[in-house]
Amino acid sequence: MTIAIWCILIAATLPYVAFSFVKGLDPNQPRYNVRDLAGRSIRAYGAHLNALETFPVFAAAVIVAHVVGGPSRAADVLAIVYVLVRLGHMAAYVAGRAPLRSAAFGLGQLCAVAIFVSPLFR
Image (cartoon, rainbow, N blue to C red; front, side, top):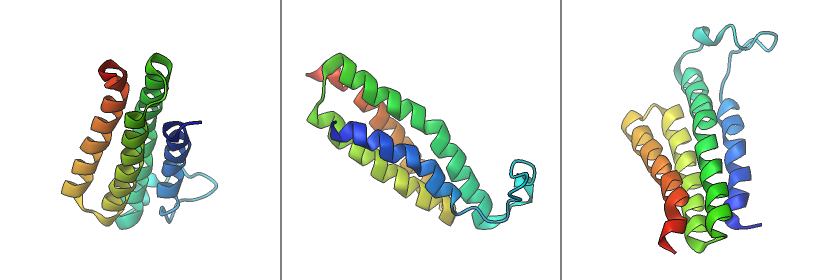
């Protein structure tokens, strides 16, 4: 397996890493008291949701790049950058650093798009 494929596995765990910072949910009905969360917990919940929302785009990009163009160093490097940027996004989100969070989100999405189109440039 290539590095980019391994990065799919790593990226798949990121929503759960973010969720580990959420405190105050009722384990019997965790979906019903989300609006009671505040501060760091609600931001961690937001990071969790955002990681779930962006993961399919990244995974699809890596798979398409591999199917269409085969493994490539560019896809591997971009996938590593994606994972690192998403970790930075999570940290910025939980810390309440909105401008940094937005920049990390944008860079992560650019990495996914670049992976998707990378076979065009071989």
